[in-house]
Image 1: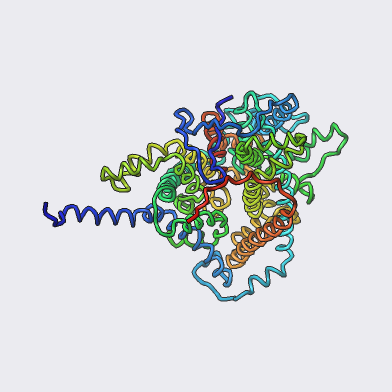
Image 2: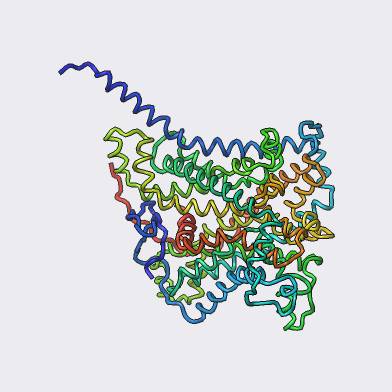
Length: 308
Length: 327
């Protein structure tokens, strides 16, 4: 396989091997000699990996199975392993009983806005940290990294009070605003742009008299498109699944999907197969994204993992 | 030619200077402003609230209590119970998770057919929300008809009541965490493994190191930075565990973490104090306690790392000689 997305690394002296962005996956395909280990996998490795894949996927498969049967069949032993006939009926029931329709729309808005703004601000700041020279650059970058260690959830009490003061109680802005930016995103974009954006391009832009904003718009953005797409997806996943703060900030009349799903577990819905249908619905959009862009998301997580 | 400066030229240089000077700050400002307003300020304000009595029903009245919230907290058995539950569930979920991730990454690092499929497959749980994952596992761990008890039945084990007993409940909750995050961590390790120069392995092989020894002396030290990174991330996650136990408890039992608080975590206790008992001041004290515990854990980790790093490390690649600057 040559489709592996290999991370780009600085060698011991901090030099990096610049490579051209790969047109198809967006990430550089680095054919560094001697990267990683090239032993072929034996049968044992395949068996173990197959088992890992099975364990990873089975709960989702079983969610689908349980969502397609009915309450009596789900609670029999042995449990069902094959899909039944009631999938759409249960989905419809879950859709109504747990206000999932509204929740889906809310989650779409919340995750979409958060992902867009995270990507935009991360690209701006990442570009500045990667390519512009200014006083205090390194200290400020350290500060950004330091903020990763501050769990945002620890501020839930004052956040709740702030949102009440602002009149945003139980509304989407209260969930959107606290997560409009992400330190991980800034760092991720900086790492990418440091490598992928040749200084000569910026110099050329400057010589043509372009100011920084213009350079950002016409030189940086086109080059940064692939990691922006990946960051968008990863942020979207996180925002869609975020739980602690939305659970506190929103009520059942105006929930996001995970908050609406607690409604299902809390005994309001007695029908187990309907509960599973709700769980399936809440996961479906992200699963679809994984089916289509799984490779890019994997690549993005692996890219972000490499510390420069 | 005239030596006078063209005014247009000078305006340009001023603008250019301004551009170079101010723009970088303008580019990074949004991040710092938003983080300051919704991240740092709430964290500090939490401490201020924790010194007061504030009721959820009347958020505007703050009555000064000094450190009373903290002293009461440290005398409260529920706090120590939640702290120990957070710790045990944290260990139960983090240690196996990272060890399995390491093994998984090692397997994924082989030359594979269908490597993309395996990578996406093990990452799929990460796309499942806490809520959905917890709902599914709650059913799998169900006492009377859950699949896990059904499987255990083949081995002659009687139906376990996972939810009502302390250790089974904590084990079940840890399982949800492990399922969701193992693949993600494996990919982080895999990325780091692929960056290890192959000649290190070759050198080790020439020295007669077995595969296992190569793994221990080349792979693990080579990805140690990433291992530390994942430990930090997992620790932060474990400290704030909330959704899994809440949903596992199915309803009112969720917030109290079981009938006897047998799996109530600090996150659940914070929620219970603030939004069930209406004591925002006490909830803030719990939040700050969580923050301090987190810092304490990191300090301990650093100390431990220091102690452990005294074990001999494989020699680093020799530095290339630099041209000496003789004046």
